[in-house]
Image (tube, rainbow, N blue to C red):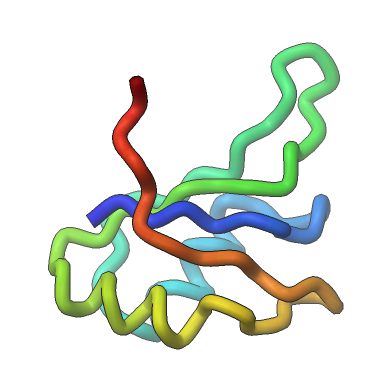
Length: 81
């Protein structure tokens, strides 16, 4: 399951994101998206979890959770168009 994580603090690394979601199950990848030109975080990322049930639990537990003073927006990622 591919999970969208929005409203991330700009200081969050991909490792931080993986650590936060690994409390809810196995994480196969975590990636904070950064601006191509500046290299600065764009404030969102994606987490891939191989087990859909663990992914649903992670979404339920992490949506609205606070990370460094910011409330996360977490849901199942939509496929790219």
